Image 1 (cartoon, helix red, strand yellow):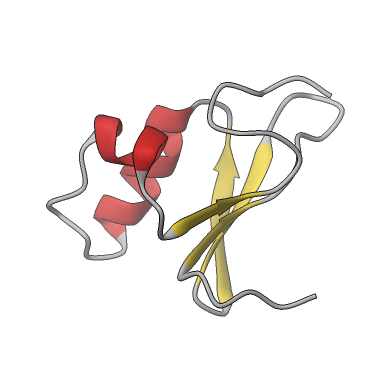
Image 2: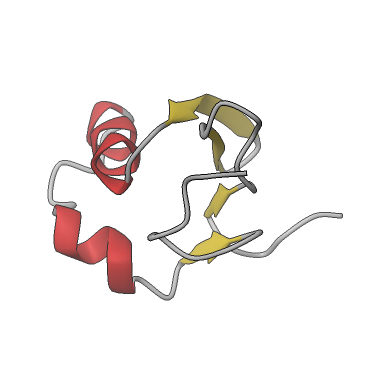
Length: 71
């Protein structure tokens, strides 16, 4: 299933990590919403703040929102 959202955070894995995709490529495994923010900053989105991650409508959260990190 593809998404029109530029960022997709996948459901938690058994260890609580969530894969993060930016456009068509995976950028890492996040264990908190702060990790998501850091991946986006490293990808060139320097203006992204942690609070943006929790409320951004351009992030698709699959399997739970930014507060869900356990399988």
